[in-house]
Amino acid sequence: MTHHHAGTGPAGAGGTALRAVGGLALAGAAALAWASLVEVRWYALREVTVPVLPAGQEPLRILHVSDLHLTPGQRRKVDWVRDLATLDPHLVVDTGDNWAHLDAMPDLLHALEPLLTVPGAFVLGSNDYLAPAFKNPARYLLPDARHVPAAPPVELPWRELVTRLTSAGWVDLSNRRDALEVDGRRLSLVGTDDAHLDRDEMPAAGGPDDVRTSDGRSPAVDLHLGVTHAPYRRVLDAMHADGVDLTIAGHTHGGQLAVPGWGALTTNCDLDLRRAKGLHGWPGARPDRAAGAGSSWLHVSAGLGTSPYAPVRFACRPEATLLTLVAP
Image: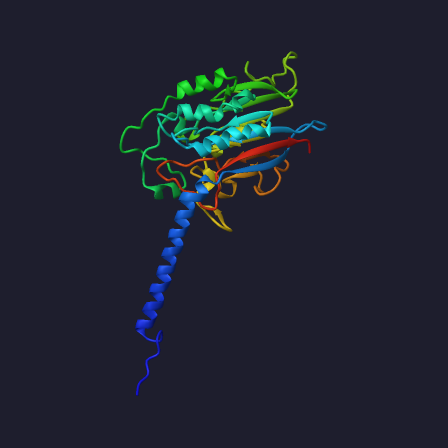
């Protein structure tokens, strides 16, 4: 009599393979459900200390918000952003991509309302100017995911947004310089418009808006901040050459889809993957450590939202950051 043992012949091997494929499919479905239903709304506050102030100064708190990509009806995100005011920041920096829908202005202004009572500075991102359009989500994994849309993009009411923010007292740093008195400190600021749309133009140093000019009348500044939406290398190099102490940027979404233990798969610009989010040195050779001699600080936010056409996050929670600046 011949005995057949399950799993030892072709049929058994096929069954094992099918079970493995089935297991992978279930794992993939679970990961997609987590990414699209849970993590994308699991907002996180990160707290980072930056040793950048002059010796002897008290800490300075900067709230960095970015990439809300707000659409109507996102009540939980709106409430979470409003609650950030309880952190009592000295300064708010908004690095753009605030909305993703023509009708999002009321919700966006409601979300930012408590923060607009605090001194603030902002730049715009590509999705502040143009509503997002559908594209193959796989394109996002390319090193630089810019593309030519199939249909003309829809322009958002960005001029009204700029007017609303500046009327509340926030300074627009799109290709310009400005200065703020914050908690008894004088800050000089420089910003660029969105490099992802090639709108960036570094404002010249030493002009009338550069409060660091040594004309004998301008007061000394305690900190020089750079602000931009998309952290392209050309912008970061220009900021570093301008002598910024800290550059603040967004745009990358931290990769949005990350591999646990590895990190981001893309930055959606020419920034290296290791700097996809968090605090690093630029152009320091050790981006995972202190800025070091010859480098300035760079903070990149993973942001709070996603394109409405790719509403998923995995191993990369949506975030805002409280940066506490201290003396070394």
